[in-house]
Length: 194
Ligand SMILES: Nc1nc2c(ncn2[C@@H]2O[C@H](COP(=O)(O)OP(=O)(O)O)[C@@H](O)[C@H]2O)c(=O)[nH]1
Ligand SMILES: [Mg+2]
Image 1 (cartoon, rainbow, N blue to C red):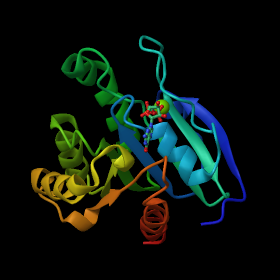
Image 2 (image 1 turned 90 degrees about the horizontal axis):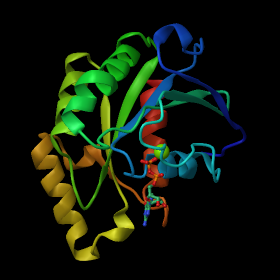
Image 3 (image 1 turned 60 degrees about the vertical axis):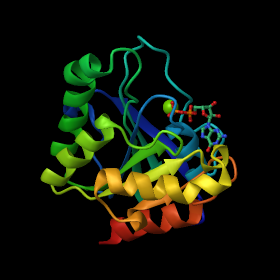
């Protein structure tokens, strides 16, 4: 994917503020510090389009980016800072559910996990909620460069098992080595043209 243009559109915390655009949308979700901003920056070949982790306590919102005037990347707030369950119940979850239920052009949700940690309850819950709402999900196991080479395959297999999905539905990724970048782009393109 040749990136000719990548720009920030706006931040919004409720549906009335979302940018109006007919373009297909790709949403990215993951716990804080998982490497979501790095992954987005890697995909769009920009150093700091998506900012690094937000400060805890700061009001968080959904950030929208336009890529090549062809697709909108939606950077959902990170979760899991301090009190995971409380935060998810009270703020993160309603914000994210509102996004997915009011965004007709959403094509795929990319759920990012750290390969060393694998999917946990939050990711399992989100994936099952998305499947109920018929939104396709793609998993990315990032920070692949931080895992022992001999354990990478095992980790992917374990994650697929935990999620009840095929290993093909988990893209191995690293923002550092860029492994998985081309594959992730091809899966995104596929989802956007479906
Ligand atoms: N080694 C390595 N570090 C990464 C990778 N992706 C992100 N990081 C680091 O992990 C930290 C959190 O990354 P960031 O993209 O801000 O995470 P976010 O909070 O999910 O947006 C930063 O120090 C990044 O440099 C990766 O693929 N490999
Ligand atoms: Mg970030």
